[in-house]
Each structure stands twice: as structure tokens, then as C-alpha cells.
Length: 302
Image 1 (cartoon, rainbow, N blue to C red):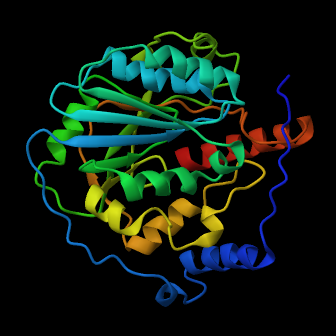
Image 2: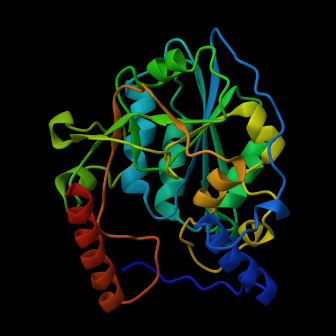
């Protein structure tokens, strides 16, 4: 049984108002764009062997994250330098053990960058993303989720597609996805212990993406260094007592003024899972969330 951890972190009332107001602004229900700075940088087009920093957060999803880290070991990038940044909490023992295992794997053109955060800082994903954005030296930053897998040729293909690009934001034109999996599915059970694992590609189906979403935001490094990741929004830079839904991802795209442009990125896979281990709640609320996810999934397919 997963231990429920409780943290005494309270958001001031005025930041709660800011967060709700910003969500309305992003939905075009409040005219608040003038309150926040706009990007002014003109990103420099880069060619040659690029450096891409991939940023993931992992909280109690070690059995998913194992596939992402394994894909860098199995499909070694040849023509691009990768910095794999992972934010995690030491209180999450399974993830800590997973990262200890992969820290020992020597992979050409890949540098592991595992950063422990106090759980209240980890739970607000914009905090880690903002730190990377403001301090990265990479040409591009891929703000990802830990359930993505970079298949054969994925990162080399991405680097090829980014040659000479100077836009703010790109995203893969297509992804390959699993059905909604439970924790007792063979795929997820196979990754319970720290080791290199591989997926069966036949378990995935192809889907077209229409705009950037939180896991598919490939952002020019120049823009990152200027704007950060919701750096102006105090409510999104404050620690919280539990994992928060990532409304800041929509706010980020609103702040930079684009939903992104699609580019060809081969062999992007995503594991979809029905059991949200990072959220709090009893059996009733968990069952309700799972039913909602099933309904949402069917609606998207239609």
C-alpha cells in the first residue's frame, strides 16, 4: 500500500486568486495578457550537432520512467548530444533506486542529470521546468513526461528536423500510444525492478497530434533563457502539498503566444496508464478518476 505523505504548504489567498484568474485568461475569459511580459528574443537558428535537454519529473512512476531511461540506453543517439534531466524526491524510494541504476550506465552522447527536490517543489512541475529553462545551455529543451519513450532514431530524427529552425515551440506531428494500462499489466509489471527494459512496438497505435501539450513542448533554448517557464507567475513557482494538475503548461504557451508547430520526430511512444499513483485519495476517488479517464479516452478516439 502506498504511504500517504502530508506536507504543510499553504498557498496565500492572493496567489489562489492569481491562479484562477490566469486560468480564465488562458481560456480567453479575462483580458490579462498585458500584465505579463512578452518574449522579445529572436532565437538563433542552429545547425550541426545540437544539444537537446530533456526534462522529466517522476513521482511514484518508476515503472513507467524505466522505459524512458531504457530507451536512451537501447537506442543510443548518434548525431545529437542529450542531457537527460530528471527531477525526483528521495522519499520516492522506487524512483531513487531506478535513477541510481541508470546513473551507472555509460551511454555515448547522453549525460544523466538527476536532481532531487523536496516533494513540495517536485509537486509543482513548473518549478523544476523554470529552473532548467533559465539555466540551460542547450540549443533546445524538450519538456517531457516520464511516460514517453524515445524509440529507434527518435532523437537523431528530432535533431535533423530542428536543423536551422528558429521558432519558439515545436512538437512531434505523431505519437504512438498504448491502450490505458493498469499497474498489473505485463508491460508495467516487467519494470518493477531497476533494469533496462524494452517495449513491444505492436502494443502501440499511431495518433496524430494537432498542438503542443505538456509532454510535447520542444522549446528553443534562447526563449527558455529569456522567459523561463511561467517565471512571472508566482502561483506557479510556489511549492504545494500534493501533485498539482499542470495548468501551467497551457499558461506557458499562452505567455509565449503559440501552440507550436509540428515537426517530424520518428518513433515517439507514450505509455498510457489508468492508475494515477501520484494523486492522493481513497478507493472511491481513485475509482471515479479511472472511470473519468475511460470516458475521456473514448471521447478522444471518437
